[in-house]
Length: 159
Image (tube, rainbow, N blue to C red):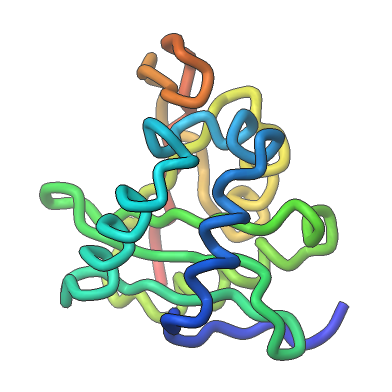
């Protein structure tokens, strides 16, 4: 599988991240995505904001130094939430699980919240392997699907 690591997102990563976040299969699976994944100006503005916000921990996920995706932790009100995105070519190899483990080790607060479309079995499995437990379900508008869907809310307690 190779060595999985986290590092700062660099300017030269942005073209590849943009392409990863436009993959139609991944976009549908993630469900809660940018309104228009093909809008490069909106992508650039979003990532500039994420990378400059001191309250957001954002990392590139690498495998043997190769960019595989991104992961981040960010405040939502009084909660801390995580997210991740992995290029589809890396799915099913344990990379997302390891990246999320590395991320939560860097987040000093608990609990940590995560969310996934309830039909996204892969993402739910990743989060459960790391120790997240479902704590509820919500109905939310999924931009990638153009409709409301069920979303599972998960929480990681403890160290």
